[in-house]
Length: 257
Image (cartoon, rainbow, N blue to C red; front, side):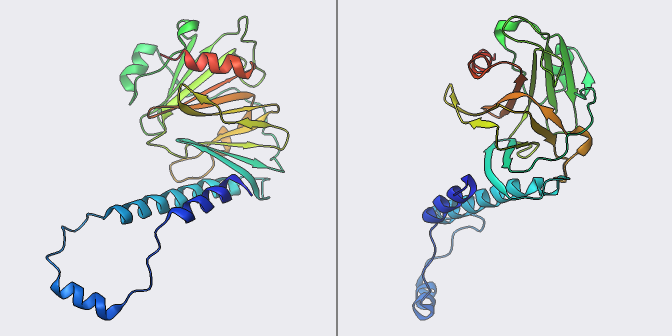
């Protein structure tokens, strides 16, 4: 059973399905009942059911959003999700795109980025100031990218040409902005980092892509990625990419301030 199937099964057990109504008794009760509550307010059970159904819809959308990716037509074997990102495991991966320079948005200073973002940036405290700061405005609240040169414990990654690439955006405003497609040989783990949810992907290059506001895959932004840690920090989705191991990635994540 896939992750999506397990989630839908659990939600099905929690939903309160109403019994077949007794129309005659219902009519008598309605005639003698006090005035109805104000419109727009849901009882607790109805609210819980509505929220659960909304979550089902979100999972189904995330599970099918990458189906239009060229060269990927087989079924999703596993689905992993965070606020702001969906990761799919598939048996077949698309043809790797041609290698191109990273497009991280507009070059900026850290002070300038702070003034234009809809959130306060998080920086790995142990690394000092970033070597590069970039802002992309195609996502609600904008996206921040930070680059750090290679150094001991952070070798130069073949996919980014830097030691560490950090990206941050408001996952609550763009719940399906990032997508990843991983193959059978990649490892996907779900560690908890200071109580928050995270995904660690390693073992084989995987595909990293953006979706536009209409949910379509931006093929010009699709590229191969190396080892990646995705984590939720309050409203933010933070992504760390590099050629380092899991322990190093988690240590960097815990140093974010």
